[in-house]
Length: 142
Image 1 (cartoon, one colour):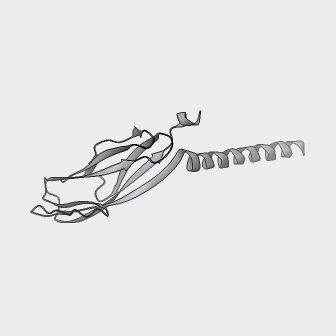
Image 2: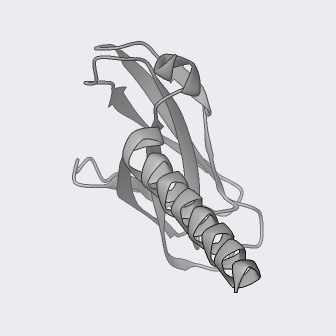
Image 3: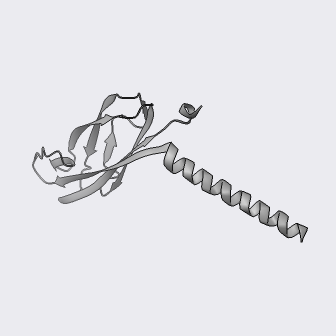
């Protein structure tokens, strides 16, 4: 009987610890996450798409490059760690000028997305997403 109470108590403590950790991580550590659509068209000539609703690289020939800039702004009252990851068809073709950087409160930074298309890439449309994550550095909790 006493052994069962001890085991039950340990299980409850572990479960509480897990839930507190998940709450801390999702509500305090990760502040915001944005997803930006990305696209480009691989074709034999250059094309431009200046729309601002996504990261449009326009038309890029095989072996060519295209870049787009975007402004990252920290509206929080504390510094944040900004990390950027790309997904989709463009995951291996797009790089960012700066990644995993700290951004002071109420400040901005211009980031360049560079699409480098390999020779031999098939003509067609390619799509992806850029995930921009704002995290609160653990040092700001102290």
